[in-house]
Image 1 (tube, rainbow, N blue to C red):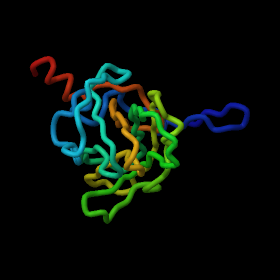
Image 2: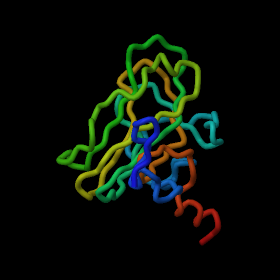
Image 3: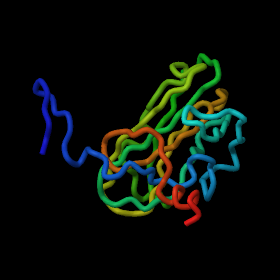
Image 4: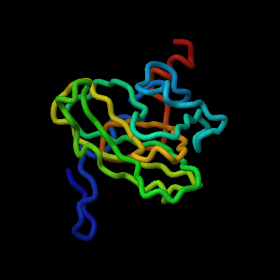
Length: 178
C-alpha cells in the first residue's frame, strides 16, 4: 500500500518502522563493544534525551557496532553538538561490512555542515537500503579534525522513518534484571 498527498508519495508499508526499539545495544551509556570508542572522551554533558555524551576533536573513526542487518530499509539517527566553529567540513554517513566488500548506499554522503550545528544540538539521520544480509557497521563521522563534537542518542531502526531515541530491547531487559 502507498499513501499520496498532492501527487507526492508519502509512505509505503515498507517505510513504516517494524519496531520502535533501538536495534543498537548500549546507546544510553556506550556500554558494550564499540568501534573507535577509545578515541573518544566521556563528556560531563547529557544529551537531549538525558544520555551519556562522548566527545571528540578529530576526523573519521565514527562510533559504531557490528550488527547483522537483513535485506531491507533502515534509518540511523544521532544527536550531535559542535562547538563554535566556521568549518567548511561536514558530518558524513558511512556503512560497510567488516572487510569493506559490501558498501551500503552512498558511503561518504554529507549529512550536515559543521557550521550549521555550531553551538546547538541537532538530530541527524540517514536512511539506507541493505541489498545483502551480513554484519555491517554504520556510522556518522566528521571530516574535520579541528572541531570538538559531542555525539549521543544513537538510534538504528528498521524502516524509512527516523525515530526518537529509545533503548534497545536487550537494554530494557537488562534494566529489569532479566
